[in-house]
Length: 421
Image (tube, rainbow, N blue to C red; front, side):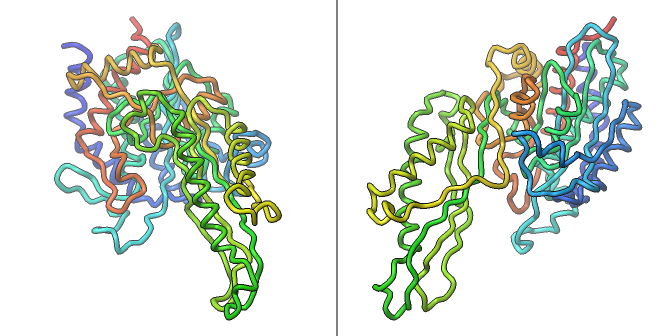
């Protein structure tokens, strides 16, 4: 029996235990600041696998001194990172298997059919917050390691499993891993890609634009200048920047993505009283950063674009908007299509699925940018989750796809790290 068939049979035999593990993860509401109970499950599993375990709370002071740091937290107390290392026998390439344990809040509970943390299994899917983004992917990683161990497939290279916090707010957990010294010859992040392979991923940054007006009584609004009306001009102008930036992207990996690097306005605040003319509006949003771009260049382009506002409305010549960058950001990342890790993963995919994988660019950012840019680690994003339901009500993952991903990752790890004699 060949290695692929052995791993496939193992996955089939362990289907129910995999479901139980995923249910335990999803039942823990590991939103920001509440990750420790879900991480305790990870620790328990790593101990069962007899891996070398490292547990620590990221040091906010150390992280804040690094330019890649982004977080709204002042402390990571009770939010530990967990790393487990399967030591190889030497002479092979090493690999990082990185997954985040934090999830976004469930939002409006009335939009959920079931409680988001009950982990309901129905029609081959498991429903619950974090099932697809990305606890299902984390289970795939743990299954891959367990299969290799229990099948006595010894490796030459090290396998470094990372369960990190804070991905949803900028990647401080993964940055902490890199700064702690965890490096490898390659990395896989099983974010919800619908089993597509993402060699490229966009980054993003949060920004705040303040639009100024002149207050007046609503009954004589003509005596003032409405910041709300001027904000409409700014919004239209920013839409033009989005069109300009996306017109320059010709990479065929983006062909099926309608807007490769969107600019999204997610929050608007303005005015203080219904009977007053608003003298200030604050727009907060997110700008996408293409894989080949530098964050500083994107910031400079947006600043220059907003300085063109007087061409749209002369008001802005004397009352320019204020631009600031705040909160979270995600570094972009990319790996060459011909990189050996891409070749290995694609080959393993074909062995399991008997078809060639779909290779596209990621429509969102991941911790891969930190691994590739800060850690200089070639990184591929590939996972079993459903892209369309990440952060959505009634989030779910297909259980069989989670097992397929585990099989593909196990084969890739065996090939990449090399099997010891």
